[in-house]
Amino acid sequence: MAHRWTNTLTHSDITPHRAFLNRRQVMAGLAAGVGLAGIGRAAQAADALEPNSYEDITQYNNFYEFGTGKTDPARNAHTLTTSPWKVTIDGMVDKPGDYSMESIMEAMTIEERIYRFRCVEAWSMVIPWNGFELADLLTMAGVQSDAKYVAFETANRPDEMPGVRFPALDWPYVEGLRLDEAMHPLTIMATGIFGKPIPNQNGAPMRLVVPWKYGFKSIKSIVRITLTDQEPPTSWNKANAREYGFYSNVNPEVSHPRWSQASERAVGGGLFARRQPTLMFNGYEKEVAALYDGMDLKTNF
Amino acid sequence: MDRIKDQINANARRVPTWAVYILCLLPAPYFFYLAVTGSLGPDPVKPLEHKYGELALQLLIAGLCITPLRQHLGINLIKFRRSLGVLAFTYAAFHLLIWAVLDVQSLGRVIEDVIKRPYITIGMAGFALLLPLAITSNNYSVRKLGPTWRKLHKLTYPAVLLGGVHYIWLVKGIQIEPLIYLAVILGLLALRYWPKRRARSPA
Image (cartoon, rainbow over all chains, first blue to last red; front, side, top):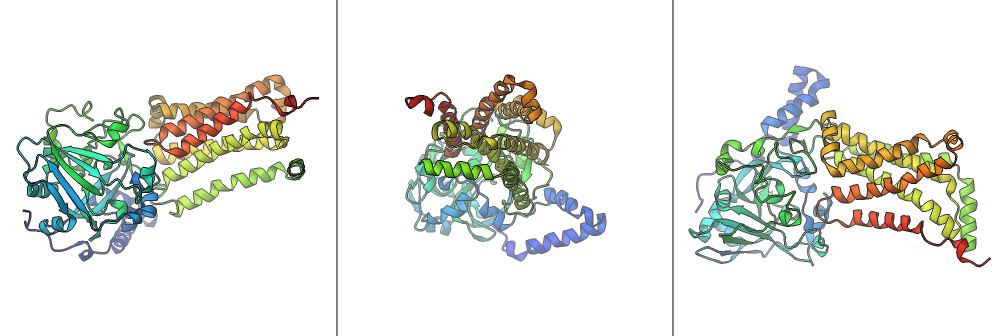
C-alpha cells in the first residue's frame, strides 16, 4: 500500500496566504507603480498556483444535494452525518465489502495536492487538497483483470440532504471513470482541505478529485465504489446527454452548448477581474494527454 | 373588500410616479456596491448579472399585474404601469451590460454567443422587443401613434415570455424558481382572456 515518501511540511508551514499576497503586492507595486499592483498580482496568480482562501473554497460550492445555490451547501450541509461512515467497494474486486472510513484512513498515506479546479460553469479555483491516490484504495480492494471502469455513488439521505427532496437530478448522484483514469496518479480521494478535515459542503468525509476534468466529475461524499466492465451511467449525462459527456475533460476548444469553455473566471478575483484562458486538460495535458491518444475529444466530450 | 380597494386606490393617487422610479432604482447601486465589496461572494459577476435579470423579470411581471388588478379587483394602479415598464427595460439593459462587459468581456464573443447559444438568443430577442416599447414610453409617442401604440405595447407579452423561457433554459438541471416564474407569467397572460368583472355582474 501507499506508504511512499511524502512531504512532511504542510500548508501551514509556508508563508501565510495573506502575507504572501501582501508581499507580492508590495513587489509588484515597486515594479509597476501602485496603480498596477492589482494587475501584476492577477497575472502572477495564473502561473504560480496560489490557492484560493479557505473561505472561498468552503463557502462557494456546487453540491445540489444541499440546494442549487452556491451558498446553500455551506448553509445546509452541517446536517450530514459523516461519522460513522462506510464505503461499499464491490463489483470486480478481490475483497468486496463495507470499508469503514477509519480503516481506509489507517491504510492510506495522506498527502497534500495543490490542484487547479475548473467547474463546467466556467469558474475556477486553486485548492490545496489533502488525500490519497485512488489507485491505492483500489489496489487495497484488489482490482480484477476484467474490470474496465469505476462507478461512484454519493450518499442519498433525504433526512440529511434537503436538496434530494426535489428532483434537480436523478438521485443518488453517480459518476464514473475509465479504470486507467481512476488509476492515474493525479486522481485522488480528498479527505481534507488546507490541512483540515474536509468540510461537509466540500464532500466529507471523502470525495473524488480528478483535476483535469470538470468539477462535477469529482463526486462528493462517496458511499459506493463499484468496479465494472461497462461504462457506468453518470448523473449530468443522464440529465442532459447533449451537454455533459462521460469524459468531460477540461477542453477550451470544445464549448458547452450554452457557453464557451475557452476562458474562465478565477473565483476570488472580484467584480472587475479579467477572464483567464482555460488550459487544455486544465493544465495537466503533459500528465494525462496520453490517456486519450487517438481519441476524438470533440465526439468524446 | 370594497373599503380595502378604495383605500388602495386613494393611496395610489397620492404616490407620485417619480417615487416609484427612485424606489425601484435603488437596488441597482445597492447590489453593485455589494458586488464590489465582496458581499455577493467570491465570484460576484454571476450573482450581480442574475440579480439584475431577475429584477427585470419581476418588474415585467409587476407590469402584467396592473390590468388584471383593475379588471378583476377594481384596483387602479394604471399610472404606475409605464414606470414599471421603463424600469424593467432599465434592469434588462443593466443585466445585458454586466453580462457583456464584466462577464464575457469581448464584443466578438458577445456576438458569437447571441448567434450560437439559443438561450442567449432568446434573452436578446426579449430585450429587442422591449426596445421599441422603451423608446415610445412618452406622451408624445402615445399621441402620435394613437391606437397603434396600444397594439405595439402588446409586445410586452412575448417579451416577458421570452424572459421566462430564458431563465428556465439557463439553469442547470431542474430548478423550481424559474418554473414558478413561468407559471406566474402564463397565469397573468391567461387572465387577459378571462371574463372581466364588469361583464360578469348583471347590469
